[in-house]
Image 1: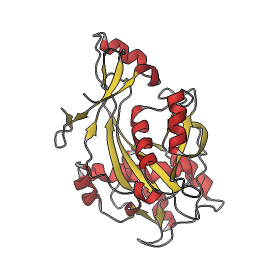
Image 2: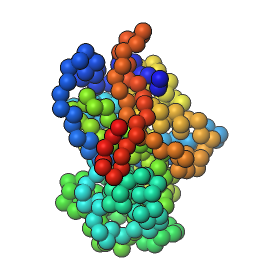
Image 3: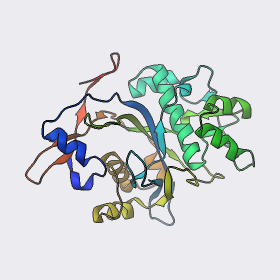
Image 4: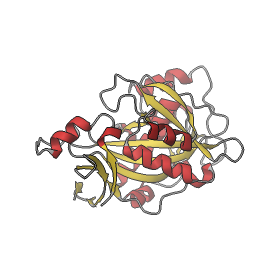
Length: 288
């Protein structure tokens, strides 16, 4: 038996989960590829790492008022050939993630793009090593809006600014798949990255009404008290950050990267979301 989260602590999914548990069935939605990033830095003194997170606006169709890491769906253009790239190649990432080379490029590029769109932090620079791009110039807010509105692709921005995506600055931490009963499903890779010096995480996105650096232990206490809402994948990841001694200890590849798909179950304490690992046939794109 996997870890269980009572439905009462799992925001936004209790209705569909309860109906599914009661035996009602409907066509399963096709999962959409997505990437999310745990952006971390060292806190003051010996307080351990802090993580940048956003609270989604209450009117969102998916996960309203929930505290999340920056991230979002893959744009097919994240897989464009010729995307300026430095660090481990898409083929190397494919071996680590257990997917095709094209998918690996999209997941990593989406992580880089989303953290810039939602936080203003760009993990790209003029070369494969050394300082990253300075994004505080007057033209960068419009570039960011153009990406968000899909008027340009990440490749367009990097080519125009003479930059390369730095895939060496992100690591793979976890792989989660939204439960089958959800009307919106995401095949999500969780990455981690260190907050680069000389850039500012601002959280200026229309999808969030609050953004800040959080001390993981304090956020977990707020979650336990019911004053902060998080979904199970986020809770598990925040717990891992809380256990780390420093930010650098977070930004290391996880040795095991099983696909995790929660399911709804009944138990002596009521209905709950149980976290379980599933096998995936990568070549066929199937979950078993």
